[in-house]
Image (cartoon, rainbow, N blue to C red):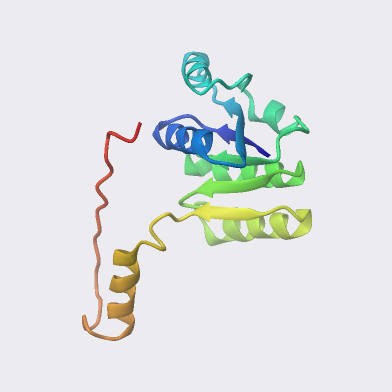
Length: 158
């Protein structure tokens, strides 16, 4: 069983917690957010005993194998690097970081740590996105000058 923690319990953190709690081979072992009330609410809902308000305490727990990082993008670089240095595998929500340089630092940290780093680009393999990319690559849409996309997320995830 992979012992998994979620750092950041906003909307997407809750989606990660819910999904991880249903996956075979995964044990949702720890949750972390600075908001004590939110932490208790979700930890109770998903029967998670390890509850942290400081991500560094979660990273110090040797029983945790991997984390989902669903905090604000401004925190992604530092928490990802610290997580990798602590031996955790990291699934970081998009965007990976604010700058290409920060992304490079995160990738370098993953390479040096031997841990896995993955960015949660969930639409990358969506057949509709793949078909649109293929149409662009084939030139069927002409020269793309500007693009706008919207994804409708169901509010009834849980």
